[in-house]
Figure 1 (cartoon, one colour):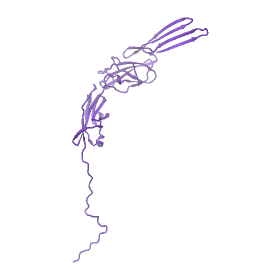
Figure 2 (figure 1 turned 120 degrees about the vertical axis):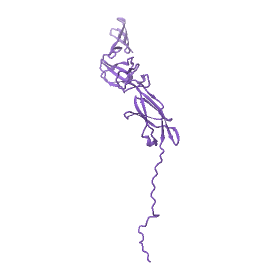
Figure 3 (figure 1 turned 45 degrees about the horizontal axis):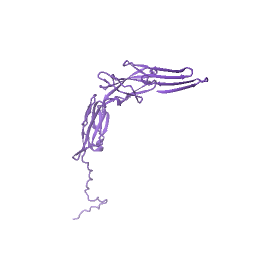
Figure 4 (figure 1 turned 180 degrees about the vertical axis):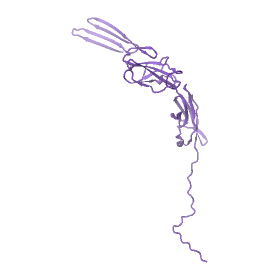
Amino acid sequence: MWFSIFLENAWVKRVTETLSVNRMEGLFALSASLQHSQASGWGFMLTARISLGKDTRTNRWYYGARSFQNQGAASARAFLDTKGDGVFGEGDTPIKDVHYSVNGAQSQQATEEDGVAFLSYLPSQQEAAVEIDPTSLEDPLMKPSGKGVRFVPRAGTVLRLDFPVIMTGEVTGTVTLKEAGKTREFPGLTLEMVDAQGKLAKKVRTGYDGYFYFSEIPPGLYKLRVAPEQKERLKIVLPEPKEVLLEPSGTIRDGLNFTVVRDEAPEAKPQEAPVPMWPYPPPLNPPPIVPMRR
């Protein structure tokens, strides 16, 4: 909202004073103007304007203060991807009250019951980056699948976008070290989550009390293991990996504990040099042997 005052002084000493108030944001535009002149006296004018736009996916109408004609728009749908294929289909659930980030700024429009939000006033012929604002998701286990979408809006065109959301999993446990007949917490040990293709999904280190915590792990079958490269450096016996299944509905696995044993194999002793048969080295020029006489 802004105010403007215009003063005009003509040669015939006629003075015109104008006060204008304009509102250009929100649901509609409103302009009010108050004018006074010596010739015509007082005058007042009030102008209202509204712009209409339609989401072709939901057939819902939207309106605003500024014109939609020279701007781009997007119909963005957020849904819970229960199959993990990234495509909205049977069994997937729309998510309500999700906000989007458009070029780093949070949109005012949130998704409705069908998971769709109408993102308007996107500058045409300029690249736009749209992604789900993760802080607007109601469940802490929900995470956007992917990093969003980049596209170039076109004036007067509504682009349809789908944003899948997955339910991630959490895995916790404790690692203890068995050494010289005693057991204690094992801090600073690295553990890994490896997927079914053998790819490292995530790794963490145990805390001072041996506790570890994996978060935001996508659904799937994993192996939880102690990082193999620590075997020689820490002189430990690696425990058997644990198989972990995280369901698409969200899984929290607690109590996946490990006991690591210190490798106490005796060190190999160096071989001793053989003992020589002579107490001293033989002479270089031994005396000649003389036969005995009878």
